[in-house]
Picture 1 (cartoon, rainbow, N blue to C red):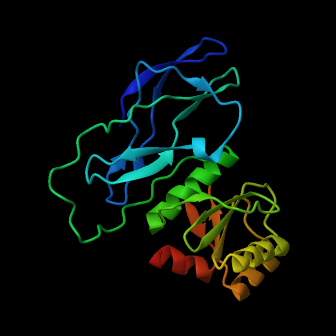
Picture 2: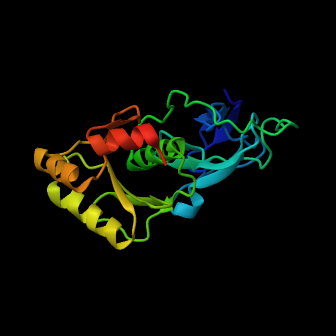
Length: 229
């Protein structure tokens, strides 16, 4: 577990004790950003995809990956972005990692309380499957949030209504124009017609439960969950 640091809200001046969450590296080791004890938290007033991620190096295998910026919600309503240092918590080992890929560890995600959490949980899951270059999609979907990786177009839908046939078809058509495979992640699930259409089109469907763990709900999703990239 990462070290706790004091964080003061610039809006109400309330002080909090914050510890950054840990995320699973592909090697299986937990990774957490090193917090800057001397840094000053800033209020998040707008969202920009490029500012949502930081690069953190795994102390076990030396791999550098992008992970969500540490944030804290103050009771006054301000969202605080906590500053980090560029150095890893520990130096990487001198010897290179083994060439044989490590078996997958149990998936660790984030509790979903907001649309941002849903995107973070989806991105973490895709990293576990082997997708590294995760970014915001070029085209904004009709509903939800679009992210992409090499050969993959993903729609994250935090709506309270089940995804419809139209939602699935729009994702499939957009993915086809970009020579990618469409994958859908929904918080509220899917209508029966949407599931049937997704099966016919070969679109993997996942449901995000409140703990942030994606659950495959059709055969294409089962296959993706098993094989990854």
